[in-house]
Length: 323
Ligand code: PAF
Image (cartoon, rainbow, N blue to C red):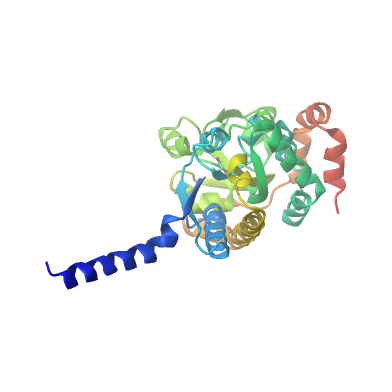
């Protein structure tokens, strides 16, 4: 080949290298979460990625992946094989026991109450407890209020729950609540839920409307009761090393991106809750919307008494009184 050809090949090669320069300098951050990308859970990491990559001029590349086993993701964050996860608090209490306080049934009156408490000093103090467990609690997101579905019968009263095999998350507080109601709580990862419902290993499950819609649980569950029995917080958790490695400016961008994730997730939950009941009825589910909440709270009285003893009673009171 002529010298001219070799020179232009060299120049072309250099140009490619220059163009690829920033890509070579990219640092990868992996984020895993449950549920499809087009769901309230997927909305958080997607907003995080868009915001953080833009604010850092693509010096970072966020790689997002789905995993419906939330306990496994937290373990991976703790040992550092992935950087971050967006997870419900379902299994988090097994790592950071202080989180369990937010899993108490009927603790929050409504979404504004829950979001307000989590964003307040009370929520921030609980996030600060993650460090002692080798985790960084970055920001609260959410699943929304959980409701009961099953394949056996209409559930109108607490007595209707008796004897039902109900899949719960791997969460001691939720399991205790369902056993006090006379159900047979069966903890398992979400990844195992659909086969368990199909095979009749369990009769029912409980999840927010957003989850039931996004995962077509109407295909395996006939009855749904809007029990609103517990608010289901979610949280962005990272390996402490991931955030410690960032310089001060990038750490600020990281938090801006986390706030964008929180806003996107909450907006999607609000939208899903507004349209979800109609959508599930359209898909053939029987949905009971009028529920005697006081009857469910009364049935849970023995569990409430236990939690007053085993949890931080003063914080429980502060949360209930929060306005
Ligand atoms: O039921 C669960 O395990 C959780 O609510 C889910 C669906 C994984 C979302 O966080």
